[in-house]
Length: 197
Image (cartoon, rainbow, N blue to C red; front, side, top):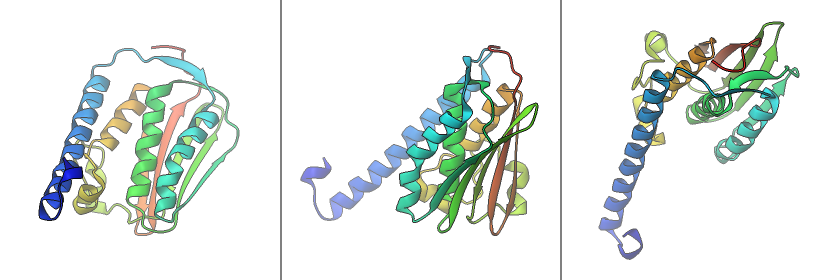
């Protein structure tokens, strides 16, 4: 329709398109969250977390570069880990996408480190940060700390709830540190996991 419409009507069609896209995103995220809440078994396999993370960073990098942000990935060569690959990718995509959305200048840094028993994933940005009043509720479904920014970027308020559910399904933890100089999300996953659950 938009190809054959001009002037004021074209503007209204663009508004409709934006809201339709947001509704589709909300439905997709709700379906994903509902599925996670009723998941009893993960499709886990041993995989190289470095290769997996590198691929997601490569996919997300152009979006960051369009905003003039630098994106880096560092790691200490962790061993293979037993995870549900699709769900682990969801964690990476949601956290990196959030970092890009809420950062106007500076950087997004992705790091993978490990010790004998734990894989530590860190996503750090130089964005607007999360104020103290939002800290306790940030992982709640539909909770948005910065409503105006989320609305402009098409956020659903479900991304961090999905991240938390996936991490818990892997017997891990997720937390964050934040200030007015940026935010650091920390995901810890046990390295010695069974192949399936």
